[in-house]
Image (cartoon, rainbow, N blue to C red; front, side, top):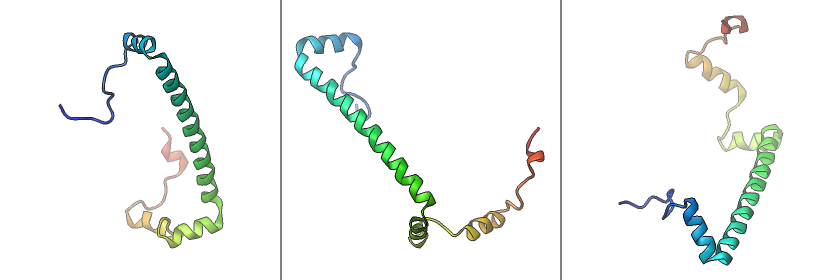
Length: 98
C-alpha cells in the first residue's frame, strides 16, 4: 500500500472519535481548538488575498507592472488574439438565446 498524504492514517468514525476523546481528552480538546483557529486564520487570509486581487485588477500601477512582467497582455493584443484564433466578431445577444 502506497502512502497518500490526502488520506488520514486511520478512519475517524464516531466510535474512534469517542474513544480518543475519552482516552486523551486534553490532546483532543487542544486539537479541536487548533483546527478551529486554523480554519479562522485560513478564512481571514482568503479575505485579505481577495482584497489584494481586487485592488490589482483596478490599480493602474499594479496593472502596468503585471503587463511589464508578462503576466497580462495589452487589451489591444487580447482582442486581436481572439480574431487570430478564429473567434471573429462576437455574436449578437439575440442569436445567443433560444
